[in-house]
Image (cartoon, rainbow, N blue to C red; front, side, top):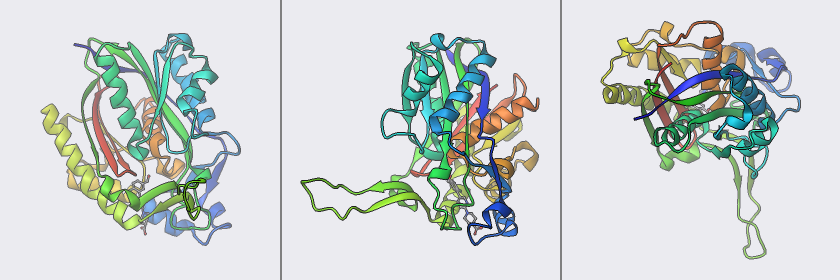
Length: 323
Ligand code: 4VN
């Protein structure tokens, strides 16, 4: 019986920061509204680097910390909703950029739950003995997906990337997981609809380039579903919230995390929030938090972490990890 264990984490975000006040110059909004309702104060917006560029920078940092050469990476999985291309996958672009010539590379699309779904997929390859290691990255350039004429959404998102290197281990690493989807509610958060247009049909060329969200519906979904998946995973692992050192949630909105904290009766000091600096970076938010907590020495080897992602699909996923 093998486990997958995190050997190293890393993150990379574009340098350029945009404050709420900066945004208020291009869209009818203000710092008071954004920060009181979401906890967001700044975000990093790319000035040209694309999703695969951010991912490759994270990958290089992670491999350096793991002490692993690119050619020894066996699997690369990138979670993203903002890929450079429809194809090739961002994972293949990363493979080429870092020279991981022996890796198998593919993407996973599960939006804000993407990093958890990608970790889960890598875990299956490692546990089953197919691969000995995996580089798992979440990377997004959401600035290119935001409608800067819609004040309800464009203020919520940011760009960034992060990830982890997983290795086969005799010691427990990933302890348990709970994943879920509800496609019936999927249209409450969409990005990039394209109607069928070809010589064989009379489409109207309907195209939606940007993120569209029913904020109320997604907010309600998150505050109902996240406590449920957390309770479920703790039951599966036969643990209680007392056994958890830190809850690492997707950084969509500070208010959502406060509701979750109350509902699962885990004090806010066990949650780490950094949406004030990065806003919502979808699949990258959880690994960016992981990296920041590790860099600050907050999480240490042996800690039990509870990861929780939730978002478009709709999808959600939680994971218990012995770090
Ligand atoms: C998960 C969530 C969100 C999200 C939903 C709503 C929301 C973020 C609506 C009310 C508004 C403040 C902002 Cl829960 C987004 C994603 C996508 O990653 C995933 N903010 N808000 C208000 O009026 O207070």
